[in-house]
Structures are given as C-alpha cells and as structure tokens.
Image (cartoon, rainbow, N blue to C red; front, side, top):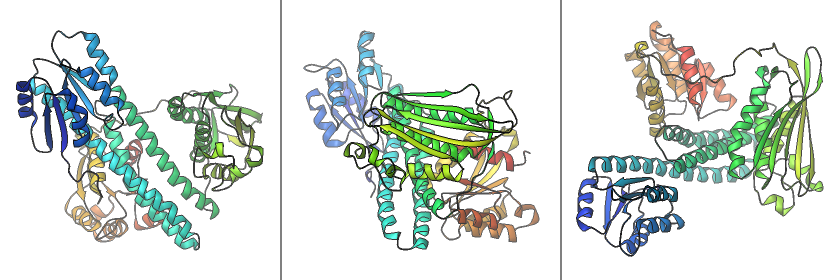
Length: 536
C-alpha cells in the first residue's frame, strides 16, 4: 500500500496579521496542496501533528512566542523535525537572528514586504523536494518488505538447489528494480539546490542504498562460490588508486561515527599489477565496512605493504586494523563461517548477516591468498590478507584523473529507444539521457519496442529483459531475424536488473551487444553508448 494515497502537500502559514495570512493563502493555493493558516502561534505544534504539515511559512515577530522559539520546538520534536520552515521577518531584523534561524534548521528567510513571485517559487521548490523525499521513503519501505521476504524465502528454499537459485534470481531482479529508482532519484536529487542538512541526508541515503545493494550481491556471491561459478578476471590495475578510492569512499561512514579512517600505502608498492580489481574491491569494502561497524571510538587504519618482490611478481599485504570491541578468542574461527557471528552479546548487538567475512575468506582463497585475524577484546582487531600478483607494465607517468561524462554535442543527433515497463525507471533514465543531449523514445514492452524499431531509425536500443507482452530476449531475437538489413544490426544493450550468469548468456544468445546491470552507474552507461553509437 502506498503511504501517500492522498498526494496533497500540506502547507501551514503562521502570522499574527490576518491580512497577510489571507494574501499568502490566496497566492499559494493551487491543486495538489492544502493551505492551513493560524494567527495563534501556540496552535502550530498541534496543527503540524494533526495534518502532517510538510512546509511552514512562519513570521518571526509574534506575540507570546517568537518564530525562532517555534522553530526550536518543531526541530526538537521527533514528530515534526522533518518539517521544512521558511522564516518571514521585517527588513530591519538583525542579520544575527536570520543566521541563528538558519542554524536552527530553517531552510530560508524571506523579508517583508514579500515578493509573492519569489515566495511562490520558494514554495514550489520545496514541494518538489518533498515529493522526492516521499518517493524515496516509499521505495525504502518497499525495499524493507522485499528484504523480509528474501530471508524468509531463503530458509524455505534450502531444500532444493534449483528452487533456491530461481528464487535468488527473481528476488535479485525485484529488489534491484526499486533500487534502480532510488539510485536514480538520488542522482537527480544531488543535482538540485539543497542546503547543507539536506545534502547530508542525501549522502546518507546514497550510502544506505549502496549497503542494500551490497547485501543482495553478498547473497548471490555466496551461492556462486558454492556452485563454483565465481571467475577471477585479472587485469592491469593501478593498485594504489584502488586502495585509496575504497578508503575515500568509506571515509564518510567512519566520520559519521566520529572515527578517523587512515590509509597508508608503502612507497615501494608497484603502481600497476595484474589483479581482479572487482573482487579485490569487494574484499576491501567488506573488511573496512566490518571494521567501521564494530568500532565505536578511535580509528580504522588501512595499510598496503610489500612482503617480497621479484622481477616479475610482488607479494602484497593488505592490513585493516581497528580500535573496536575485538573478537573473543573462542569465536575467531566462527566469524568466517556463513551466517555465523561471535557468540559474545556485545559483539552481536551490532547486527549483520554473517555473510561478509565468509565471502571475503572464500574469495581470498580462490585468488590464492591467505587471510588471518588478530584481536584483543576491548582493544581492537586486525585482518591481514596476503597474496602474490604479477607485475604489469609501469604506468607511473599516466594520469589517474577521473573523467566526468560530458553531454554529447547536439550536432550528433543521437536517437535512442528505451524499452522499459517501470514508469519511475523510464523517468529517471530519460532524464539522464536527455542530460547528455540524447533524444529518447520509450516502449513499454518488447512488442512495442519491435514496432518502433521497425518504423524509426535509432542509433541504439536500451532493452529491459523482463517486460509484459514480449520480454527483451524475444524482442531482440525478433529484431535480429525479421527487420531489414539496415535495422537488424542496430546496437542493443541488455538493460536489466537480472544479473545471474544464465540471464547474461541468454541475452548474448539473443543478440545483444552489451550488458548494463541495474542499478546502473551513469558513467558506465555513457561509456557503453559512446562505444556502440557511430557518431554522425
């Protein structure tokens, strides 16, 4: 059930001048919002609670209780702390009071006499933000429900490997679909103008989304390891940049807990080695996340050292240490077992699935490395991972600068067909593509995608795999077999929340040129489009 069956945004105007209330209400009233007014500031808390007020437009100078005092009451109450407050004041108010109001949580300050056009624009902007937040909260609730179903179904599916694999594939797709929406909404929200508090909340939302995605990936990886389906793909990689980037990515999570996350890379570590960057990234993410989770004060330290060096190989040692609660000696072996945690209640209170360290150990062993742990209860824990790697060609003179995805020139006239049945994902993907100056048509199922491909000249098709009427595999095969020579070879990208190996094999067999998994990273989608589209 949607929390917001009534989509109206409730706005409260507070001023002891009834004429001002009447003028503001008249200016702000329109479809999709309900305007409440009061000249009695003592009634504000009750009105906000009774009517789920989202935005308050409030005068500072009022009898009995000031707007600043009311703002403090709203922000200190858990039921109303989410309310966005715009303060209204006279032209001669001290700037110190305006700054004080903003520090207390107000999103803006407007000065009398009010410019109604500016006031309307401010309210419209906040209403857009409220709608984004509503959508995100709704999707988070959906994710929580999916997660509960996921764990319940895992227990029931243990009796049959085939049933379990089918379940995991379906649930992965179902969870990744709303995750794609949340990831995209977060990406778009970060491009809107927000204050410091709202930006912080968006950052926390982004981290929470990535944590949920990591949980889904951990469960799938655990099953792949058991089935012997994990492949190690070693490529030339800048090891220094990889370790630094992982540390930088997780540092905000440490800072949020009041911890310091340090990263030290020895000077003699070769810059380029042959490694499986994806799996090494996964190992480090799990170890550092684990260290942050079980550390309440102090620091987490990540170190990379050279143990031995030969002309063609290097033995590297990755160390992740913390000043956390430590692991009881009797439980140290158990933390590497699936769904197991230390028996100590202090350790268990931090929660977790018990999958992360199990996967880390198995991946390290698959890569030919060793993993050890040393820990003192109350003082901290150190995980040490050691492995041999082949040296790559030295690229020390190269640049590691990250290149942002620019918009394509409008002169290229890139035209893409997006086959996607989810309305939210349609909206988000279209906004991102249009931001790159790409013209987008939409098909809501495979049959419509085939018809549009037959009638129009597209440069590329983004084809979701699971759609009604005709799925993406069928539509791709139909395009490849039945369209004219000029159209049947159009680049098709499988654009799907299904990430199982069998799905990728079926997509390749159907004739796709590339595979993008949802939730997708915009820069990766950009690179695929750039590589497949022939610029006109």
